[in-house]
Image (cartoon, one colour):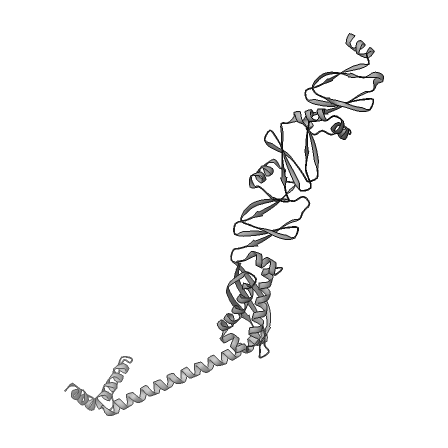
Length: 381
């Protein structure tokens, strides 16, 4: 109580600052200093003392008198504040006790209470090093501080072509890569390097004899030069689709329906060579190409079925006539043998008689058996 009376008479005031806070004090509207933990005796004539307290737990120094503190109180600022500044193309990674606390973008400033640290700030020139170092990227992801990072994730069997502000810069292997993105546009084009299949279905083709067909084509391909494939055409898969369309329409359009049905393998080879050559020029390797289906219109299928049926019937007639001719020729040869060999004729007669006897209960020979027995005796002799 006595201290307060003395302080009041002398125009001063005692101010207590806790360990977990700091304060800026002003007298008659002028910034005078930064107060640390403890008791402070300050001027207060006419009640002109003002105290602005801040909690150390907030870590950041935020005050309406920030500029005045930095310019008028350099000693206090150096003692109590940690100031981090970045240039136009710089990023600052700020750590506290070895753990990433925050990231500061280009052309920015951050003021921290030094006693809330210890602090460590590392600046990075993103113009010279646009890619985030792998270990730092892992730490940023773990700390959840990737707001200034563009991540590019590439799966196995793929690659990524990265462009910065429209200029191609990198080709990435499988994995996760980070790029600093403030003030720039980061874009990544993923390209699948594995073998893939493409189907072109329901394509209409007019043959040389003016028959409209629908064809289905399939092809297998893989990208061997990603940069060439991406830079040469807007969509290399679409380019392959169109190449297959044009090549097969041109090739099949020069043939008749019969030629297409009879020489399907040759048609594939002719069209495939053209497609492979065109796609090789844009970095795409095409392997197997096949004409899977040739689909005729309904009325043409009926006509073709009738033609096939007539052809098969004609072939069957030829075969029947050939068999009949062979059978007649065989009978003629047998007759010649029997005419030249009476014994053979008699054997045939006996075989016929035996066959008949086995099928009836009683056999009556009306002319007697003399001639028949004599023949048997002669055969036996």
